[in-house]
Amino acid sequence: MVVQQLYTKCLAQGAYYIESNGEAIIIDPLRETQPYLDLLEQNQTKLVYILETHFHADFVSGHIDLAHKTGARIVYGPNANCKFDHLSAMDGDQLQIGDLMIQVLHTPGHTLESCCFLLHDKDGDPTALFTGDTLFIGDVGRPDLAIKSDLSKRDLASMMFDSLRNKIIPLPDHITVYPAHGAGSACGKNMSKETFDSLGNQKVSNYALDPKLEREQFIDLVLDGLQEAPSYFSFNAQMNKNGYNRFDDVIEKGSKALSKNEYKRYLQQYPNLITLDTRDPQVFKNGYVKGSLSIGINGGFAPWVGAILGDVSLPIVFIAPKGREKEVSMRLARVGFDHQLGYLPLEIYKADTALDQVESQAASILVDKQYNDSYQIIDIRKPAEYHRQHLTGAINIPLSQLQDRMSEIDTTKTSIIHCQGGYRSMIAASLLKKSNIDMFIEIKGGFNDISSVPGLDFTQKECSSGK
Image (cartoon, rainbow, N blue to C red; front, top):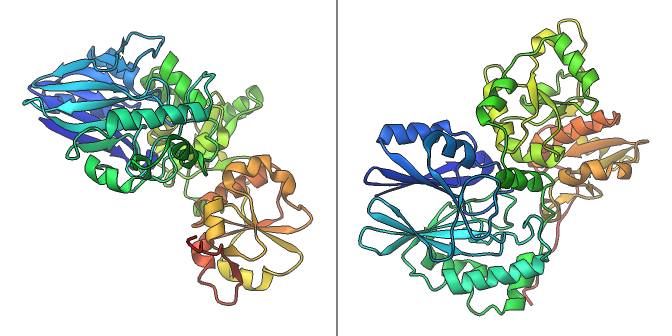
């Protein structure tokens, strides 16, 4: 028996490969199929099933392309109603793979069709539980992502309570919990950095599995502090349910180098064209195509593309670090941005066209500017980061809300923009520039550097008294 976790850190997502006697199952695959095909060929195994724990919202699954290339059967939970060939498994159904058996546990709550898959070894003993977004390490899945549902999030949270109490808590403590996500995913709010754990440990440490919690207490805890889901989530969930473009076709088009004339033609053809610059933020600031957005490939790229752009149908031309064009195309496709028109080689564009710049300064300039009435400090970190500690007088406009809250920026003053480390603040800078707001300074190094500058005044949320 082989159980292999295939973890993709930039998406905080775990897929799984299970093998026994020349047969294999893959659970929750990413969109690019080649790594799975290579794994199957390397181990000389036949893929029998592709198991989907639910309709993923934060990425596009590779289930359809993988099924076409291998002949494996796609399996969803009850009443999935997909628009492609699949098996809609019922609670308690058993799937055989070599000497192993997978038992389907229908666990609605995160979404209505959500399932966990319980792996039994060759002796019939339960050994591992693949929990999707039902149970994370340290948390549970958010109950507000069911697509086209007339149920409220409290209704879904109540279903989650029943799923955990009736299907998961009764299982043996020794089994290993393998979730679909870890820390950094927007599918939960308090996930651990650990990517697997024993169920026994989770029964002790995970608040959601506390047997003393009553239903209404559980619902209130699960919903407390739940941030609004990124707008691209609903698009991805629909693509996973209804189908999508062939991944290979998307990458072929996205990996095409454009001439300057082709780029200009696309600008005229598509008024909503997004020019996406994926280079390092500190490279971007020194010279970029006017009107382009900075979302660096080396940060939380795909989730931020989804959160900032929202609509996956937007046409995109991108600028990439040299040699990484195909990688950028792939990572865009992972979150459903298939309308890629190609990439623009910057050296061709800038040969006879002036590039724009962003003013970026070291944190030390704040010693002089912090209390000057000509400046306003805009902290674009998440509210929890801001409340932990921030510059006194700073305005908190989280990056995910910036486009909707531009009117709160006093354009008669120079804004000083910062995040925690400098990645998000350059995204914000490019959004401000795109909105024709030029009077700002981006702080290189963000709050990490700001917090070490002597002479600055900070405010932090007082610790709870414990009452």
